[in-house]
Image (cartoon, rainbow, N blue to C red; front, side, top):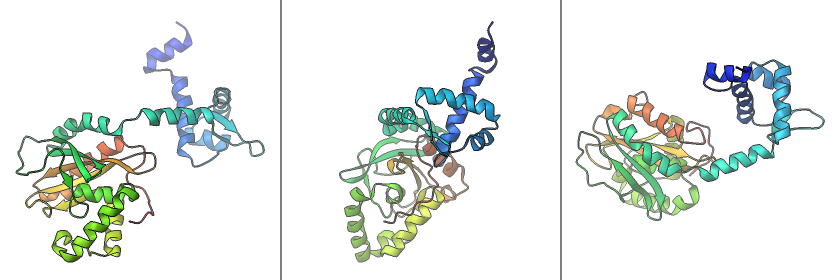
Length: 271
């Protein structure tokens, strides 16, 4: 048996290839060109070994090397791979297929929403074993200000399509403050809400949209950090919305696993 075959049987893969891909992964996590020394340190790899891998990556167009600095960066081949992956990634269908598993793990009703022409629209609904008394279902549109789903879109959704809906709901909230009783109906109050939601990684409401029900919602983010969809869990226990609850942990983990960008990240965009 040749050496490569022994590696494959031992690890379930090719150890040398695993090491090479770890090097590429480290480059992808950095914000710009990086030196051989730093790459070797980050990957706990001897510089001579890292250099051999980098030479092969250069030959394949995955890595380029700057002239004077000698630092390495991702090359056009890596860009091609990334764009191809993006083009093939279906955020909505992947989330929809996995939604029953989240429902079963959390023991809560789960729904998936996208931003449509009428606003935040439910496109899949997975009911938990314990029934909920609600008129919501497929095709329901949810408000921005007083639903967990809407608040997640407020925090992570693309600003331009949301703007008209946001302004309309803010005007209504000024006339009827009870609609969004937990926030002031001015720009500062909304900015504070959005900042809080982004910082904690999920949005929540406690029985304001539908009396007796509580909900938490988190986004599935694309490579630009914008929500392609929002996943929501609904229950009756007020403890559901607490940051350390099992449901919050499962929800954020589920959405992060389907996202291209980190959900809990600094974002200076204001509503």
